[in-house]
Image (cartoon, rainbow, N blue to C red; front, side, top):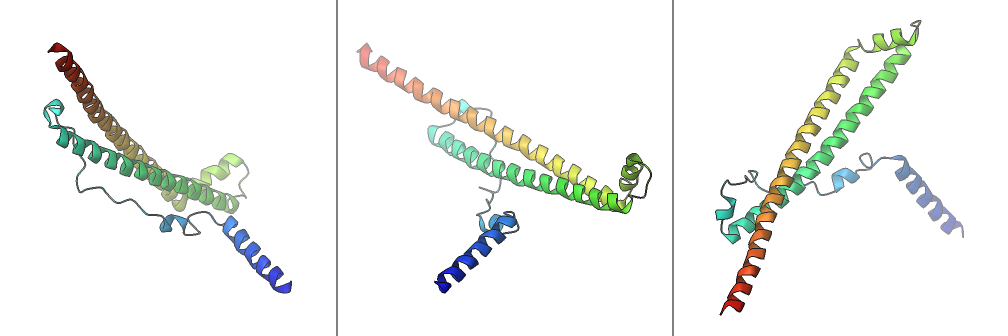
Length: 172
């Protein structure tokens, strides 16, 4: 009975410790498979899409699908980095608010905090993270739209073949 209680106590402590840690602290993010680039260069939507043979069109769709998945993963990572930068900015603000609490007004305290070098650096980091997130979202949207264009071309070809097959079947 004593052994069972001690094992249970150890398990409870482990669970409590894990609950206090976020996924990054617990190593979960590092343990997941980080996506690598599907290939060296992003696919480019060719101008004569309807002139491509079917096998090249399918290869292009696969490339766009892989790159869209990769870009979506990058957007998620950039959003995480942006949120982390925002939390860091808030921590810096809170720390210097305590340092400058002797100011007479809240506005004066905020003004003093916003002049601190560490606060300015944290603010710049938030702006940079925001810009990177916006750019990666734009890239993701572009890849997704290009993938839809290729998919529509494939669908158009398939539906055209069905019509041609029916016309051949009933025209003889």
